[in-house]
Length: 124
Image (cartoon, rainbow, N blue to C red; front, side):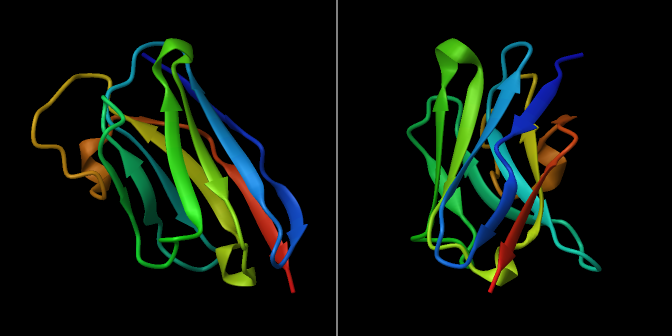
């Protein structure tokens, strides 16, 4: 079973930036970041295809967050800019351990590997 380990979370002020990393212990195909705010359901934030050529963002983060990957390092990143208090959440990395075509990046059921999460707190 491939393991995913997130890092890079923290406490920042509104307008600041953070860079989250997710290191996989093996090959991952499509990957994504989801987040869960207190008292809310988990929601999709950003996804990236195996090749890295296709990315997809939730409307709430579009233009502020950037997902990227380094396949040689089995690592995916999420750059969070212009952070807002409403971005406060636990951020989870997700990945596909088996290659499938026609991936719907924002669908949680596409992913069979999940990390433990990293907390991002944005103060106003």
